[in-house]
Image (cartoon, rainbow, N blue to C red):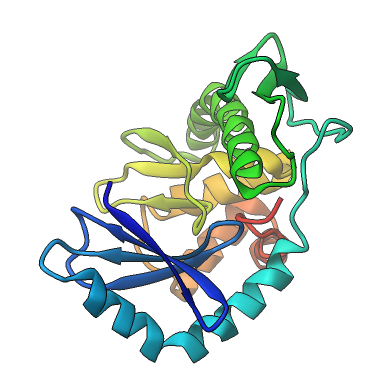
Length: 238
């Protein structure tokens, strides 16, 4: 992939060529820095000029992102981290490559012996391994739980798909396919049930009208309170 690293007024910015991009797009994500996707029809020089023009806004977003990063766990060899069914184990390897396996209730991550665990590359790899563990747990638990709650409350749905969504806990399509984020496995069971019921109610009511909340309240017990509790969790921060 064609890419170029810039430093504009002290800010590191990565330009990269994207087959999907239709226009110049600037993204700032935790531990990933500033990345600018550039379509094939646009030169890197043009993208650089756009980044320069927006450097004040970029700095503002970077400042907010740094505060968010402070809330993230920095995983190292002494980190005691567990998902519902798996324990994280990080170790050094003689190999110059990263490797991980999710098996026997363990998320085992091996990193090259010359690596610094605090580096963004290492943290990103560890998080991806953890998310594989959550995905495994989600696939084992969520589809069955959706079916159980649907039967209990007389809802009908088509399929359940597990995604690594970091913007929504769940969604329901027009034709009643339910999408659930693997990050639901971080929530207590009663809040997982609430999110599932929220999407099941959408199989009957496709909006957030008064009727929707009345039905959700009927099946969940206290919809508004549960909704506020879910909002206390940040999908991207763990």
